[in-house]
Length: 79
Image (cartoon, rainbow, N blue to C red; front, side):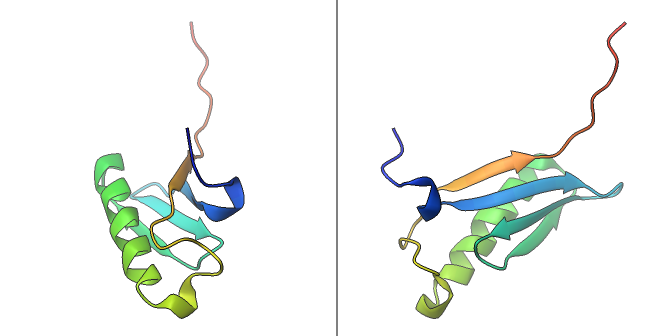
């Protein structure tokens, strides 16, 4: 069970731009990308941790907040 309320989580929105998987975070201003989903998740964890090292960037978040990862995808018709 998540010990933090939703407002104390970093939301990471992943989308594919045709070349890379891109991530934009909220409520903090973090953007990163990767060639694979695994690389992208690794990069977002690292980018969020680096961003939150500076306490002025925390926006009320705990020191090590959970990251809620959401991914945008298209539906494909199943035959």
